[in-house]
Structures are given as structure tokens and as C-alpha cells.
Image (cartoon, rainbow, N blue to C red; front, side, top):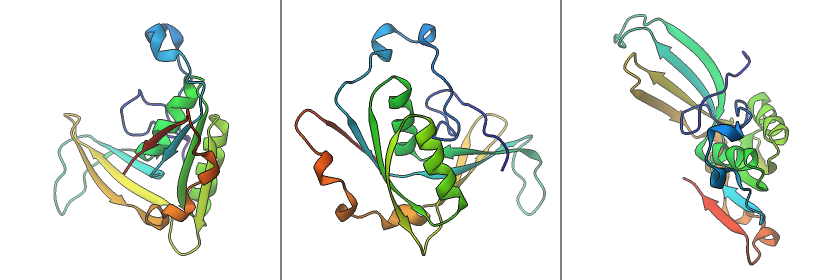
Length: 170
């Protein structure tokens, strides 16, 4: 797949494969103070297929656009941005036994996120197609894939200790 491009926080594609290095001068000082207690983030990890359309989508026809692939999933994105602030982030999620799942696990590690990933041998890693029209409006076509296999039994009970934070997404 093509090399992911960074996106600003809050936009699609801010996940494990595309998290830019934070610029401390661009944020208020309080926003970059790391949380010392580990933050457990539970939820979706997705591969985003982003299509920036050149003009409005035309049904039953070709609609040219720029296509890129980026890491995504709101929980995975949150864990990456927490790590970018220097906070300790533990991401808990599920991926398929496939190349996108292995690449996502590697990308999380590179960004400083500790990951506990369940691997589902029967479902692919989640993917979402994001169509962005010329005005910036987004239409998403998600396939949760292996994300649906995460169960309460997969939670790292030993990690839930007093003083720790939980971010639950989904």
C-alpha cells in the first residue's frame, strides 16, 4: 500500500499508520502535559481507504479522486494521539490474521502505543471506505471485520488498577 500521509487531529486517517509528530508550539501547554497513569483505550482499529473526490459522486459512473490508505479506528487514533503527548497508552482491540492487522500492530508499536491485540483467524482487519466530496463532506462505508470479535474476556483485567484511566470507544 502507499505510504500514509499525516492528518491533523480529529480528521480521518489520524491513526497508527499516519500519526504525525506533535508540534509543541502549535498546542497550548496544558495539551501536551502527559498523563502519568497508563490510559487503557478499548475499541476499534480500522484501515481507512480515503478517497478525495474531484467532483460530486455520480451514481453508476466513474468518479475520479485521489485515493490513500491510512490507519484509523477512533480508539486506535485516540491511543496514538495520547502517546504523541507522552502519555502511556495501552490499546486493546482485535485484528484479523492478515497483512493489514500485522501492519497495524507494527504501526502502533512505532508510535509508542502498547497494544494487546486479539487476532481473529476468521475475520479480516476492519476497513472503512471514506468518500470525501469536494466540499469536505464525508460518507463512510465501514466493515468492522475482526473488531466484532472483541469480547469482555479479552480485556486485560490486571491493567485495571486504581488511578488508571479508561477510554472506551464504539
